[in-house]
Length: 369
Ligand code: BGC
Image (tube, rainbow, N blue to C red):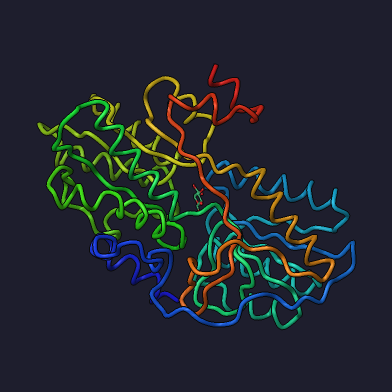
């Protein structure tokens, strides 16, 4: 499990550079195979549904918890919605899942805090007859995950890479453009998926010399942001500015999410430098404001309301004993099996399309007026 994640990170840029259109970038490199689908047994209409979420590293997780609690109740289920704590996240989440199994949960929805550390718990879940759904983040190297439901995270990375190129071109018509790369927490399987998606787009420009990674830090180990913590991204950006950009201009930064994008912008502003093109993800309130103010360049809209609603639909289907609908059975290999996935399309958002993108979002739409 570690191996599959380690591989993603060890190969870093190199893997992203060699891969072209193959699906292996979305996970570890073990061959596809294994079973798919869950036992269609059905269960009581008021059964317990467990939801184990990671710590609240971005707004989407906070919102997801509330939506699951209310949505499952509305659908007639009992629910147990838990977050991993801020520091001992892995042990917390492991204990929470075990407790859900003990209490007899029929479906356990998991946003993994560490993709590679849940094999024992999901095995317990399967042995008890529960269905395991990986939510937003894939759980790796186990056959005991029945479904994956997420926005297409490889596509998220591709959209981020393309936005970075487009944003830099709009500011300065011809290259070379100098960039820096940031990735997410190494324990989150999504981090490698986002990075590989983005690098698939950036690779040709880097190879042509149109885009230069100023620090030369292209290995995902160097670009990683432990725990998805803003302070870690900010201090890395501080160091990069001092080591590489005393006289050079920084044109763009690949940031995997909004929290880190704002930390990067804070660092650049603190150093008195012009703000480069910075990507993001999650449509966080402060980042949408920053985009409208012309600071952060882009974000990704992965509407949590839709993702939770689709997950609850899956639970309802399982309750009846039917097999939930999936729309992808080849892309998300977790190292030992291709997990049947229901993928939603992420949407790139810049100042140009923000009003349109958030038109039905009561919280974000007013910010775009
Ligand atoms: C999610 C992102 C989020 C990040 C940090 C990822 O797994 O897909 O939306 O920004 O975790 O919370």
